[in-house]
Structures are given as structure tokens and as C-alpha cells.
Length: 635
Image (cartoon, rainbow, N blue to C red; front, side, top):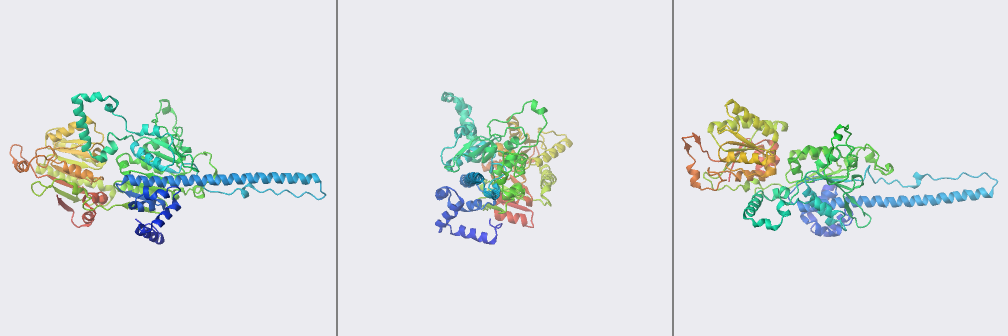
């Protein structure tokens, strides 16, 4: 974590981390230097186990946090952001008072000089009048370089309105006094009311409706707490929003005000899509309105203008929270939003250039910007983004928890009593020379080895999980070509038939595909990672699961393996072991052998981060560096 620090700074932080329990007075004294009003509440608000997180934040490094402890992390980041904004505003107001005092003093001295000159002129001395010495304004007024080109200094990117509501609630708890327009914000960013909540309680008198509601809640509960937090009944999954937050009383209590214009705000809270819409046209209204931006038909005829992103020219802290959700959305919006930060403004927005910091005028503002990235699962895409946009002089710091054997997803696989020692879980490493070719290499290996073995052994009911949508398109095209050569179309009853479920599949299409796969009308199902993230479907009837690429979220692995039909009779393995033994023979009528259930995971060395969360840290190192390429686990 501290490898990017210098030797003296690293020794200092190591000493603090080791001795902070015994040096509580030093613990408070350090944060008294960095925090404006919150240092008295640090012991109540920040727990000791998160001490290293706060140390990295106040050091203004570019950290990435991989953790599931989101409430504490959200509170720590909120404290850091409020401290930065309030301290900056107090500094500007203090300098304003000094400048006004100097200007008032200058005015008094100028009047005194004018009166003295008039008095000497009235005396009509013989000697020539000496010239009046005027002091230049630049000599009297101190130069305070305390601002950027525009007022906003903090940008927070969040995936959904529910996450924005949680962050604003954390800011409201830390700020003094009530937050203006908070009720309106809660009404617009809270989850929408369901039809049953809008109606009267008498609607539940109908037994049929009551049973349907109980069944619906049961299905949602099976999807897990993580899914319900983002897409459940108590969540607002709208991903297009933008809002400005202003510190209205920095000199006093430090109150916050919502729904302010971007150029008058201190904090900008937005989603990548909402920020892209706000900067798409120069004529757009960039005030923080809750309504979605709509374009009239006449606007399409107008010439497109350059993006108006001048309000992002002086960002000092950029927090990208819940980055693993951005990967399931359109991550290009995140990259485009980060690319607009700290660019030279294209227009004058009332800027006092005599107070603009020199590194901003030189175009080096990005080197003083802190990029904070939080995620539940680190990914090579996130690491490359951190290296690309993390340009702070403090360096990049990665904070994560190593995955042990008990925390690995393979430990959550429930099948342990099946015949033959449980479900065979095979991990096959595929050699790959470049990360750009990893997807193509995995697809090629699946087609040449796995698919050929399926056709030769007549394996049926195989679920193929594809992490990347581009790899899914390649596999779908391969299966279509093979079916056309054999005279088989997608949806037929032959062994080579297949069905697909993607994130773009509608409810009816999902139901048809799941039914056809469960009843054996389709023997292969292609299932994408984003489809499982957004829908968490229970795929029943699968006796073989193949992972083309390791799932980024490790719980997906346990979800799909635990949903297998181990006993060969459907229903997710709820039958007895006798049924499994009776089906482990050859069916002479169809000439199809019911093979034991199996799990195959194809991976490359570039999937080490995701593989670690599935098989643990120690196993991952061995599987990536070993001379062998095949590894088997049995639960």
C-alpha cells in the first residue's frame, strides 16, 4: 500500500499505523491539522480499522479501494470531501477580507495624498511642487493564488440515484445545520412507489394478489442482498442525473445547498451519462435540474457546438465510487468524463486571473488532482484507468484485502454430497501472449476443444457463461454456422441447438429460453455476465457449466454452480442420490450418455485478479505460474 511513498514518508505512516492505538493524542493531533471541524468527532465517526484509509485520503494520493465495507468508506470519503471544500472556501473568504481591507486602506491613503497636495498648492510656495508619489495597486494588494478558473472543485461520479441518495445523506449528517432542498432531493432520488404502495390496503384482500405478491418477494429475496440494493424495490436504478451542491456558509456553520448551478457549486454529483448529456452541447442548460434533458425536433437542425465542460476545469478531487457497476454499464462514459477534467476553459466565466493558481495557468492542474476510486472487485480496466488519469504527485496507492480460502467463491459451492466426490470443477489455463487477444484465444479454445468434446460425448444441458459481450457474439456466430452446416437452426430439438440470454433480452425472451433449456429442447445456453448482473436469473436444468472467462464478481461463480441439476432430473438438484445413479448409464433410445456433472472454467494469466476471488490468493499464484495448465477442485 505504501510502496509509492518516499522512504521518510513511508516510515512515518508505518509508525502511525503500528502505534495509533497507543498514541491516541497523536492520532487526534494529526487530523486536527487536516480537518476543519470534524477532528473532535473522529473517534466516533471513523473506526480504528479504517485508519489507513483516512491516512491515504488526507495525503492526497490517488487511491483505489477494493472493499465491501461501503458505509464506513462512504463516511470517510464524505468527511474528506467536506473538509477540502470548507477549508478552501474559508481560505478564499479570508483572502477576500484581506483584499477588501487593503483596498480600503489604499482609498484612505489616496484621499490623504490628494488633501496634502491641495494644501500645498494653496500655500503657493516658491519652490516647485514635488510630484505626488502614487503607490501602484499591485504593490499594495497582496497576490493570493487560491482559486482555479471556476468554482467547482469536487466531482463525484455515481452509477445510480440510490447511491447518490446515500452519499447526500452522509454529507447531510456531517454538515452543520439543515441542508437546503433536501426534501425535494429525497422525493426525486428515492425509489419510485410501486402500484401496490400507491393503492389502498384493501387490494390485498384478494387471495390471488396476495399470493402473487408473496411469490414476487420470495423471488427477489433469492436474488441476493447485493442485487436488491441496486435493483430491488427499495432502489432507484436510474443512471442519468446531475446535481450541484454549494457551501453557503463556509465562514460559519458550513451549510450545504442542493440544486445549484454548476458554475456556482462547490461539489458536482452526477452519473457519467448525466455528465455527458450536460456537456454534449454548449447551448444546454447545465444547471442541476432533475428532469431529463429532452431535445426538440428543431434542435436537430442546429449545428452542433463544442462541449461546454469549463466547469470541470478546476476539479481538485474526483471520486469514482462503485466502479464495478460502471463496468456493467457503458464504461466509455466514465472515460469521457475523466478526459474532460482540468482542461483549459474556452470562455471567461468571471474569473479573477490574478488569483488563479500558477499551475492552473500553466496547464498542470491534473498533477494536483486527487482521483479516488472505489470498487467491490478490482479489474484490469479499472487499474488502467487509474494509471491513465491518476497523475497526482503523491502517487497511486492500492488498498485491497487479499482473498483467503474461506473468502473465495469456490468455498460457497454447496454441492458436496454428490456421487463421485462432488462436482468436478476444472480450471483450464489457456496460453495468451497479449491481453488484447485474450477473448479471441478463449473463444478459439472453446470451439476447438470444448465444443468438439460436447459433440463427441453427446453431452447435453450445458450452460456457457460468457463474461464479455464481444466473446458472446463470436460464440453465437460459431454455433450458428455449425448449425447451418448440419442443417440445424437455433431453437430446434437437435443436440446442436442452442438458446441465448443477454442483457438485451426481454422478459418473454428470457422465459422462452429458460423453459426450452430446462425441458431439453435446447442443449446449450449462452448466458452473458451483464445479463446475470442485471437480472440474476436462476437457470435450471444445467448439468454442465462452462465459464468462458472468469466472472469479475466472484459470487456469480457460486450462483451458477449451485444452480446446477446435479441429479439429472431438473429442478436444481433437489432429488436423491438414487436418481443420480440410475441416470449414470446409457440411454439406448436416444444414444445419449448422461455424464457426471462438471464445471469448466477457461482463463488466461490476465484473469488473475478475478481468479483470485474465486479460488483464493495462494491457489491463484500457483495456477498462473505453474507449468501445468489444468487444475481440478472437488467440493
